[in-house]
Image (cartoon, rainbow, N blue to C red; front, side, top):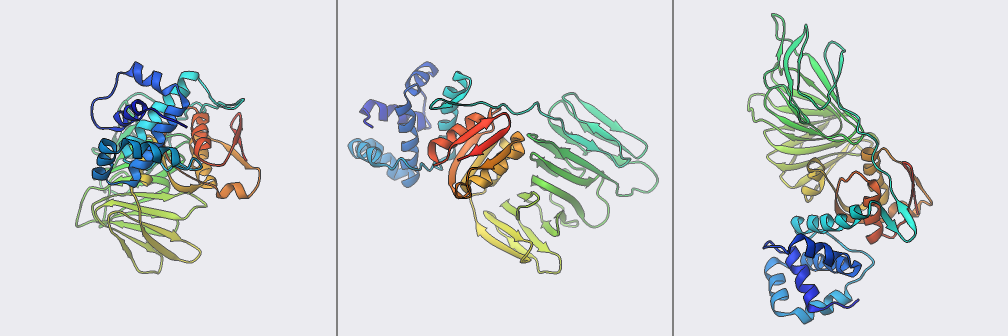
Length: 380
């Protein structure tokens, strides 16, 4: 693949923080598939250099840059350069995909749009279930009052109260369906983002000397600091004790429970074991069978991107990736053989409506092929 200096300069301009070319010029340039590959490759090179070194490279060594582009292996492309650059690559690539209406690989068409989004449900302490539609809502019954839903995907308990003489701790449950994403504000001001196929059980008002909620699925927490009452997330035999912080908890059935700490301080504790503390930028993974918590340093962005409408994959197997996509798009997944499950992929991809667009992008950099019919995917 050969590129002119002007093409390299254009790609560098797109990846820079400065003024971008007009939309028509970008669209025209990206209609050439080799230009798209060039953009991806430069992002790969950008990852390998420090910002200062990359700046010197692009300013004074264009010839060397061209040689590197030509020699860069095409088998796998790692897309974790600066997050803004990576997201730009996918956004402009998706322009081409959506402009065509479907994603094509050879003569195959990958086109399956997510099913009509189901709506989140709120289960009250009385057992009544309320469907949370698009409009505003205020909840009041014989047991509780002051629960407010605005016109967006947000439910607030900031002014919620329990009726009766004694402020007993009564619980509600928020249920998020396939493809859903919902924000919840608890009575203490703590904010929670719930991912697809998740449930959170929580008090209408916190009482006693601790604030405890129960999670199934995945949630991102921004906890309101309260030194007198620790915040605890309980899930499947594991408690995450919080001391005023931001963190992500993944607790889907069949997967190890993971806690990723963005900032602050949390402690993970399985029943009858000592508490393990995490530092910002660390992930604690709980292995239930061994009753062991494994701690490792991670890029927290990879584990929290979902709340901003993005899939982020870091050296994940196709089996892990398809598990995540299944929860979002309600897919049935079959594998042509066991070996294909272990293929890995890195990337950041917007949560677009057409899963075919996502599968197309994965095919471009991983040694797998997808056959999609309805909501059934065969991976080869």
